[in-house]
Length: 161
Image 1 (cartoon, rainbow, N blue to C red):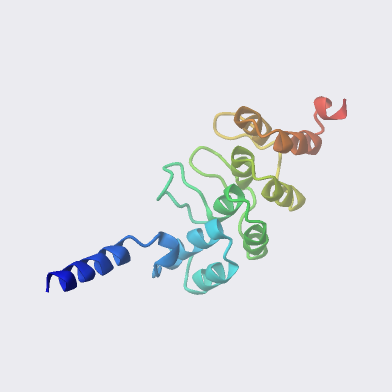
Image 2 (image 1 turned 180 degrees about the vertical axis):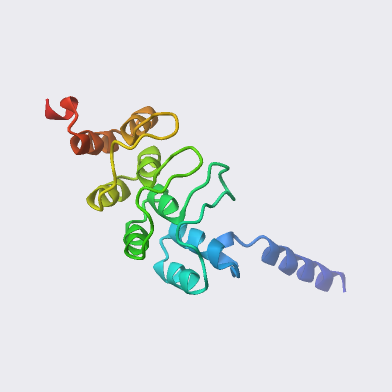
């Protein structure tokens, strides 16, 4: 009897501690943000069909907020970036601190995402609310490959040496 109780308790606690990626998400908005984080374009498509707003600001994990495109940029999810842009996600949308998706790619060192955003027309000279460019953000974080790409994109004299 005691063994059955422990088995049931273990099963219940296992279910309660599943990682978010394995849990069912009923909220289309959450599904969109999490789909962008995971690069799951099928989940994002279902979320948009279910009523998610493509440019809504997610403040669950960061009080400054990130949109689905920002999450995809942060996690270097290039197919998700293409998906979101193809469905109207604003390329230059900002969070509470003025970060665009390009700022988040630069901050995270997400080189492929940064290149995809630049190819889509993201402005490498867009300053955040503190007046910092994505280039300065990448430099502060030590992402040298990202710095090189951004220097080229803005025509920095250092890039021409």
